[in-house]
Image (tube, rainbow, N blue to C red):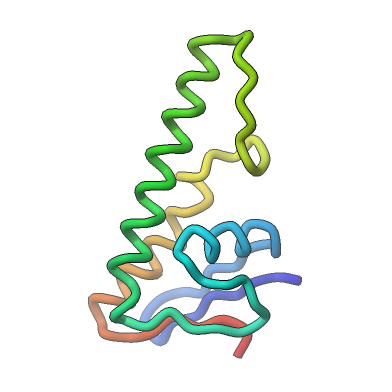
Length: 105
């Protein structure tokens, strides 16, 4: 499955299922084939993604400082910031324009 996040005011953001599931889980949405992020939900979603990025980067920094330290980080070698930024941009632009973000419709 592929997620295609859409807004009337920005380009689509396409993610593989595992990455889309991760973004939705971070913002407190249940991963599902269809859904909506309303304008009212966007500030909290952006804040949650930004907080997750800070946490992910802190864990990665600790891992680099202590090579013997075993730390489980969910996902692959792509930093969360790189994966989330297009999604955050979509949410910001949509929030500013007052348009919801949908997927699977």
